Length: 582
DNA sequence: GCCGTTTTCGGCCCGACTGTTTTCAGTCG
Image 1: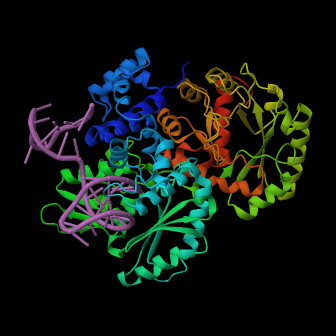
Image 2: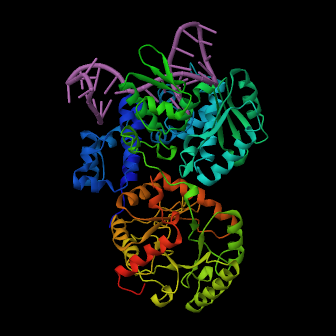
Image 3: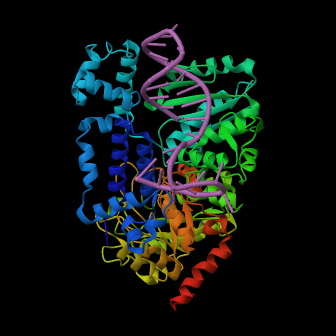
């Protein structure tokens, strides 16, 4: 059992990258930034890669970096980093993340004004000393102060769900302009990252309509402040959450290359362009060109942009440079799961515990608003006292009620389920005789978040009646990190025919994308669930599917894309394996 | 510091905007 060290190591390499930027060694800076990103993205503790020797096969991590990783594992320190830190004021490492505070700017302030901390720097910005430096000026200083203010305010990024709401609202308003030919959300929002910094909107139109569209955008009632406004783009701060929204305006023939470029990720684009370059092509947001003749070869659609570089179109959710480019070159991009594939929601709560709606109400709502074939009521069990969890008797009574409602509906729309609690020792807080009477059993951890919970989850998976592990890592985005888990859980999930949940609550998104990817590699079945506590929550399915796609999950990896009969086979197979009554 | 079907040396994605200039550097995405 271990505490994953990838994050701390990535942070160090990221800081080293900043220091090299400060020292004007931008290519070393780039190399370290890449190494940091790669390490942060690793699905496993880096020590496992060291132990198996796989560390030497990772593209972007060379021998010098490996040496530093080994040094860190052995001593808890990296000598080179300790030396580098002495070359830059401590505060500047964080400051370099602030818009307007680039390495050159900070260095000149340091060298010419002798300022080496954030407090003095703010003072010098305010009293005019910085503005007097050659090449600086009043406006630049104001922008730096503004950047600092914004940085402090937006340290917490928006969660995907909030960003999507904001983005789609703005999209709807812009769509009213008939001059707009194409429109899409771009950036990390289009890739459906779990947290979003800025919101990017892309439109295409004829040249003559550009001004009108940009002016319409910066004058929307949602806009609090205009940061920049040019011929091809505008940046604003919107009132809601003080968020930056960028609008880019493209020509119709540049739509594909522009959308590809502004969707990112940066790492994906850099890799993509490198490959294009090797093939004698030059890619920019304006199109794909022959590097020699400058002849324009593609750009109107994303498909043709990827195709001319010899690749399949890549779904935005995969564009993180995690191997998707290699797949696309081999024309092996999988058909990822889609919202329309989902046949039911297998985790929700009713008024029996902490939900807001009665079971019958939920059933009618889902029949009217979703094309689901089934859904499961999975209220809490008795250990969850704050939610008035169900006792054995309560479960039996709820089964009766569901039977009655199903009879009224004329078919078995509602499946009888439970979200049973996993105790500290891995046992469940309801007996097997009760679980055996239910159609669907979610087992979840709601206590002891500060320990490695691999053992508890494995023990729960070894219960023949547990169908799926709910929100497996227990994380809350921006609030609480998930508890450590070893890869053993994927192995045991596969062996015991237990599914893992992709919980779609906006603050959970649990499993996280990289663990979904790993589960898929292990051949583990997944269930995308909203964990709804009110009718509006069922809409979260959209971001659950998005998260699954970020983990490269296909339709067949997701259990609730199957009919109930097929799901029953999955459940029965597990019970058979454990030799209990099917 | 990384990487290699032209390379173990010499490259490392590309262009717009801003503020400061009067042709450009720095920053950003």
